[in-house]
Image 1 (cartoon, rainbow, N blue to C red):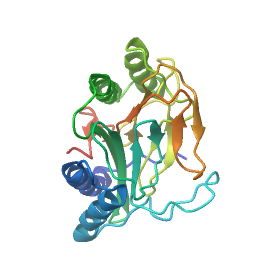
Image 2 (cartoon, one colour):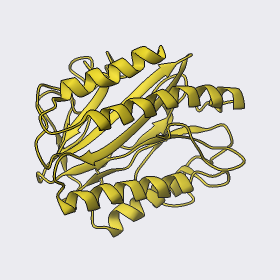
Image 3 (cartoon, rainbow, N blue to C red):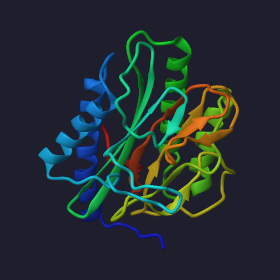
Image 4 (tube, rainbow, N blue to C red):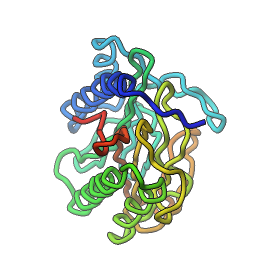
Length: 255
């Protein structure tokens, strides 16, 4: 069931979204060569604690997962697309890092993701990240009353495909509200004018995922969570929680 949120509910979701934005900003600032992924997870935990928020990631166990997720961030490095589990791995010069984070505050959830490089960046990685950000912007711009879910999907997919990047099939954005994952699904590729109409009060997590090698293939790592590119190429992931309003899309997780 798709729930339309009230103005007050969207304001409350904005409060949760601000905690997410603060956590991602803190993690990005802390990320450097030699810093471990577990240390980055602790940075995010401290932001959540200070805000009185909880993590919708920690302990989350969907049907596909062999174990509950053990962290408050997903930390995906280089060929990891999404759902990377933070480990003792220490960041190396030139790594491409994607961090996904969520927060629950006052009964409402926020969800957002960023990608960035550590140390001396590879030009190809910068292009990949820049395209992911453009795809996210295009998806948000399409999130207006009168459009449909397919218009968001088409906007994202057009940016990705035009740039020559792959899109992992079956993974994309989602509705969000009282729970991190709600209806409707928001694909990263699709036909315009199709799908659920966008109405005021609908809140979506819009999240492009790009595969640098241009192919769409991916596989699940042995940990049962991390998705990696089949061709070994690098991936980028960006995300914002966005409310559909009569005055246009409202980003709830701005940083």
